[in-house]
Length: 208
Picture 1 (cartoon, rainbow, N blue to C red):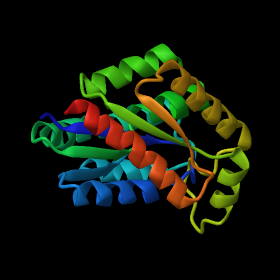
Picture 2: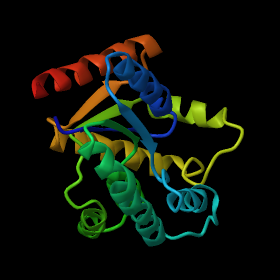
Picture 3: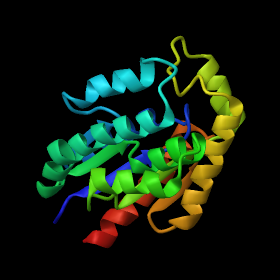
Picture 4: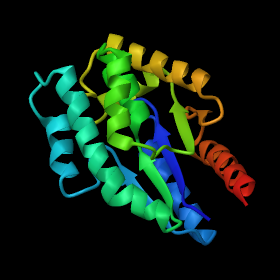
């Protein structure tokens, strides 16, 4: 059976990192080979791009963000994701192209058609089969970001930016109800973990 590509999406502080680790561990106990990735980054060339995007100059323009994100993404797709899927592995990725649609498109106000063209060039036909969208209230995101000792360029954006990001994710979930599953991540870690596993296990069962 071909590999399974699952992406995690959501605003800052929604718990993606925590739940990717938990899902990876659960899948491995079920006998699956799991490859866990993050965006931007994940390759030798992608990690310096990640550092520039997250901790570089504040005056990086939206167009630069979009192109750098997708340069890193193009390398990750060809160097890591496609070979892993071809080998029958399950790939879990912390963010993928939905983040560019929402952050650079909706959040930064870039032309959505231009954003999509850049994404299409970067990823080709490598598309996630399942996307888990972890949703938390904006106030919860703000509280969690405020507790972080070292925030990055994106986390330092103003409330209006994150309001647009939140709306962007809601619109994406409505437009792609089969692929994108919205999850209330403001519940306990255990409750969110249970909901994620229900969705993923159903996806796996339907592929058998």
